[in-house]
Image (tube, rainbow, N blue to C red):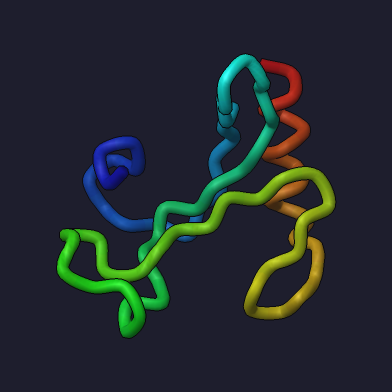
Length: 77
């Protein structure tokens, strides 16, 4: 994960295509581990977020415009 962000953790959003079986879904990720108090001991304390069309952040419970821009970019991949 750190490698795709140039060797450092980042809140920058990135377009991704999530593949589950034969299904492909446009998404967006950030590259910053957070919530480390709940998930530890795996060289990535915490989790990273994956967003899909109109999904809301767990912090603000709002749709994030930058994630949505990356979801649209992923849809065009």
